[in-house]
Length: 308
Ligand code: PMV
Image (cartoon, rainbow, N blue to C red; front, top):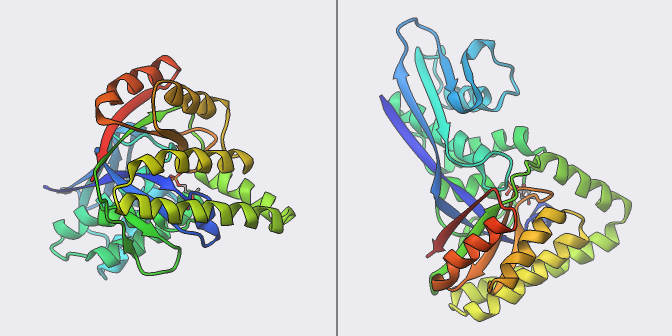
């Protein structure tokens, strides 16, 4: 048996604007992971198992746009195999689905790594990242590529679509509470709705994306120099712009308010929005109190993570 795993991720700044060429800052979240295990299959077929979604199927029976099947097929194609190998690929994940934690990308990356390792033909990170980007199109429609990039390289990134990956240096570790609204909101749909807004009034939304870009640039400096007091207000300002972009919702706003009232230095939604997760910046010593306040305010789940 060969296994591989990949972390979740969270966007700190710049979601949605990143689809329109602005920078975004994102970090891996290693408390949650996707994992793929590959075993030889005695019956000569290729199987996919994903107990979390009650799936056990021969690969051949899954549609071309099934994300797990597509990930596996793209791995086989990249490895130039004459025929699909006789293996069972079992996928599990502790990353909540459709909640802005990059579960789709993590599952893809874990599958590609495990399969290539099992077949003794390692794909490098650049190849994995490029393949995972193609699969992200099934999940997201027109993805920026940020999810697959952070998940593949498992390190903080300053990301601009189509440009070489820049590493985000973290000058001083900081603590985030990540809380899940429990509402699943497919990124693809939210990205599509933002696209419609943008098509109807490009000048207005380009100006909003410009303001988000400025916040991202300031945040990068604050993170790299360890100027954490500057970071909270930048998160608050980014959340306000995401509200203007209509991608927040009452549940996210409630959690963001609860975090601020319980002492967070700043808070915002993270990822596609309309559900999924929010993040709150906190002093390490206050993280647990904020986590509890978020659960009391209705969060389905809340975890504390340190970014370093
Ligand atoms: O965190 P997620 O998986 O919901 O990613 C959404 C990020 C967007 O900027 C909204 C879309 C993208 O492809 O970058």
